[in-house]
Length: 444
Image (cartoon, rainbow, N blue to C red; front, side, top):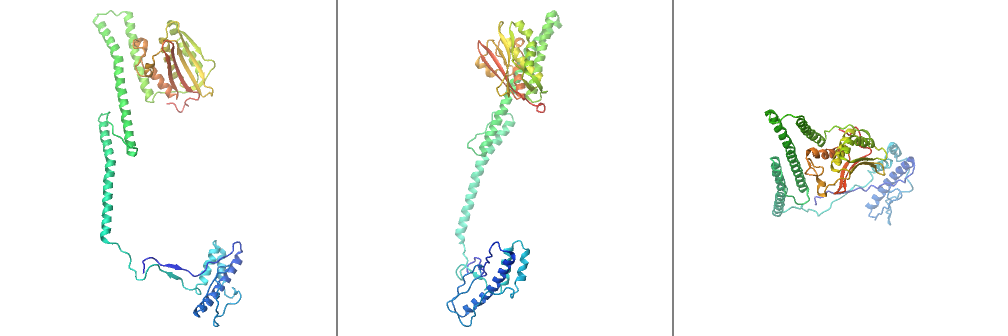
């Protein structure tokens, strides 16, 4: 026979108990079905032994009803409905009253009580008698297994080569990057995870190289800015020591002014380093920007009068923001100082204040009628030690760090600073801030 498991067919019927009946009615119906099934099973067995053809269609409760065209005399057909009380089944069925699955319990009791009268379960086996179990031929099986193993090995080698080659390239590039070869990059192709990792590595290397170049350029700029004035100070001090130059009050004032300028450059460098590192201290409070512009105008009034430049205020109403008042004064003072130096006598510098229609943004502007800045110079305006006018020295052009510091301060206030300029017309610096600004907890 086949090795498949046999199929068991249970001849006991499934009860059909109408829904919505009272439990006692269902129990009585089950007891009646038990008695009826026993009687019908005995009658069917007698008819079968007598050679009669028997049919057993189920009734409303699912119990089969025996019918035949020929009724042998020795087989007595059941008459009427059997009395379940004589079968003593009601007491057994009463145990189902406490069961949650009431219908399932009645079916279980029915199966147990009719088990002795029901015919045995039918065992069905599929297959051919005396059929030997299927077997696999050894040679084809080994061939297929060998082919699968070979394909797996080849696939693993190809996959490992495709994966390990870019990983090995990134490992070598990372080693070169750690040894100072900042120009090292990895070849990237495709869009898989390895390619994304390679692109991320290249972006990281480019960022590190850009930072290194900026640091190298900053070091060179600092050395350039300090070398000449320090050499001048040294020369004058040595001349004074040797008696070559007389220590006149004018010379001493000049040397003192030069020392103050170098101190200002060092202080600006320290502020810029702290700002870019996020370590610059801020004390946000509610600031009236109109009062701040008025204070800036008052502080620069003497310089404007000396330069013959009109200093005006265009702030129709007060606007409050949450900011560090001292740092904003530093920004405005730098912009006003640059505007006064760029404006010829008879010109005008205007401090303006405006607010967006929705009230969420405020615009602080410093406008001048100076000679303007060429368009090609605008992208470099906020670079360290860069001056729009190369002919202006440190004495007239500042340290070259003021705009870099101003941009960082505005950025720390979650704002932006922009510049527009037309040669021969003038320049406009615009600082945009949110009226809410950073909260005191957000400030460092």
